[in-house]
Amino acid sequence: MLTMEEALRQSHRGFTAGQIVKGTIIEVRPKEVLVDIGYKSEGVISAGEFEDIKAVKVGDEIDVLIEKLEDKEGMVVLSKEKAEFKQNWDKILTICNEGGTIEGKVKAVVKGGLLVNIGVEAFLPASQIDIIPPKNLAGFVGNNYHFKVVKINQERQNIVLSRRELIEQERSERRARLLAEMVPGDIRKGTVKNLTDFGAFIDLNGLDGLLHITDMSWGRIGHPSEMLKVGQELDVVVLDINREKERVSLGLKQKLANPWDTIESKYPVGAKVKGKVVNLVPYGAFVELEPGVEGLVHVTELSWTKRIAKPSDVLKPNQDIEAVVLGINRAEQKISLGIRQLEANPWDKVVEKYPAGSRVKGKIRNLTSYGAFLELEDGLDGMIHVSDISWTRKISHPSEVLKKGDEVEAIVLEIDKPNQRISLGVKQLCEDPWANIDKFYRVGDLVTGKVTKLASFGAFIGLHHDIDGLVHISQVSEERVEKIKNVLKVDQEVTARVIKIDKTERRIGLSIKAANYSTEQLKAEQAMLDALKPGEDLVALQHAFDAADEARQDTKE
Image (cartoon, rainbow, N blue to C red; front, side, top):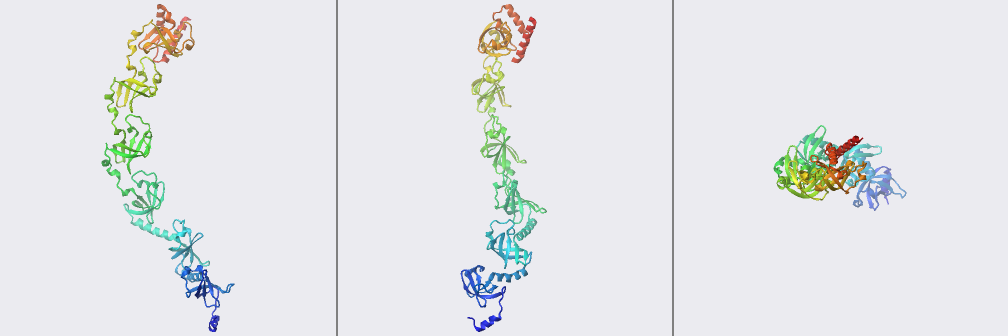
């Protein structure tokens, strides 16, 4: 109960809503605190208005703002925070204005940013927290920072802050200082800020510099991410400074010695080296000998004997190989390498090993329209030209008598070491039958053989000594033959008479119809054949016989 004196004193003291008065804490409850302000009833403050409710003690004196003199329960509604805000607002306006700086503590995360206590509550938009808006705002709660006051609204009593502007201002000052004091050759600490295809941007504590991909390593790099990652700290060398545009070029490889400065002594010509295949191109393979040093193995330097179309036929990416240094161009940073030089060149001994006239054996490795390739040893082939397969037969393609895999004997005809060619012959294994043709065949002889081939102009008859004779269509029968296939078949055995021997053209003319001719008739037939001027191939021979046949028909008419 109030004493008469206290009641009288209270009645002379006026209490109004919005007034700030002093009060004494008389009770601390879990959700509220009771405060005596000297009014007829106690006042109540929400426990949430105290930073640490456990630190509040009975008897503590605090400033409070009267919100209501009486609620429905007859209690005075008080606010500690609003009292502080009202007391601090005028103080804030006197110590700072728009554009000024102030220190505060981040109180909580709210929609769109942070709530900051600078004596009163102020708003810090998320976009103004840092240069790059952070994703985790909760990490700032409870921390003290300096802020720039960007807006004050006295009517609404709110303040908008920016931390970003202070950071940018500080960075700008640091950037100016760095540009003023920095010189090429300096080694600076930095942090990888961003990676691109062409390089990395390095934050030099206020100034961004470009570390180009070509200045990251003396070796080959496909992308900056192979060496760096965002947030990584590293020391870089200042290569160039453009103070007007505030651009700085940086280097990483320049911290190490250029391996090309001592390249000749480290990789002398003729030395064997080891490396890794890092790139394959149509003309060769690039081999990394060490970071920053690559050599090229040209496709022609892969093998002494094999004709390799492309390096990928024998090499693979990342393959470890050995090679021999063939040449060095330090100015252009090029090294020529060879793989075939690891072994002796088989062509150095080919003349000694396969002299002209010697007999060799091997398997047919490949056939072409102009001849057959005989494998003499691994990687060493000789070629049998189509004209050196037979003395007597007109062979259009080697497949007529040879096939892949055949074991064949041949004679070495010629060695062309500069062009790495060995010429072989099969027909040279035996004597040329045409050299002694007079011993085997004479005009007028009766011969027997099988039809080996039919053509529109006649038939070829296989004789002894692997010689073919030609029976023109006009020499098959006394009667006119329209088509040779109507009267003769392949493998059919026939008897014919030799009516022509041409040593120059290496041809024998036969006649089936003359098998029973008299001597006079044979002479007449031979005179007709002597008038022929056959060419060098079967087509020319066909035309020649056709022309002769037409002449015969004209004579009869």
